[in-house]
Length: 208
Image 1: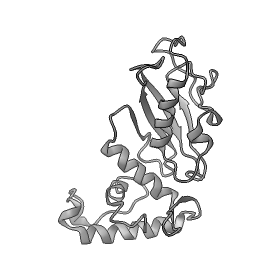
Image 2 (image 1 turned 90 degrees about the vertical axis):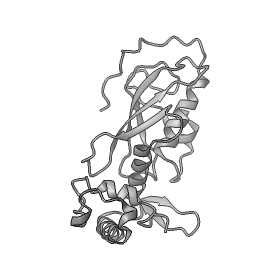
Image 3 (image 1 turned 135 degrees about the vertical axis):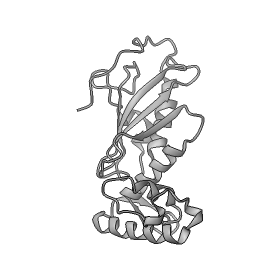
């Protein structure tokens, strides 16, 4: 299946650090690499997956287009967390879980470097992403912490207006945090180059 334990080995190993995860086999406690004892890691990972699955609403998740199986929300986010921790792309977009002990995996810190040829060129801006209980069936909510003047962002709250960003407006359960942030970065180029921007140290009010 799309969320078979071997595919999610890194995400599951990281889940051992979380408050709601079981303890890995004792001889693996010293960070024994997966490839040195895959059988033990696999057995432990499968147990974790089964335990989590009992608490997870498996109707909420990402559908595998090949066989129709649903990857539950928790596993979607564990996979996205693993990608974020490994790093991806050219560094112009990044994100990470705000609190590694948050069992809901609800809030994420994110950053975007403004694209070339935009009013925010090479500017480093901070955001918060909220993946609610219906994610990935519903798109994440995104707030800018750094104050910016963009047509896609509420100038009162800093929240991204999802209807103004095609990726979020046309969201499907195949969407990801990374995809949303990359789409948000791309949309920055749609505003006029000479749009005046607030000083870099100005911020929006904290999200509600």
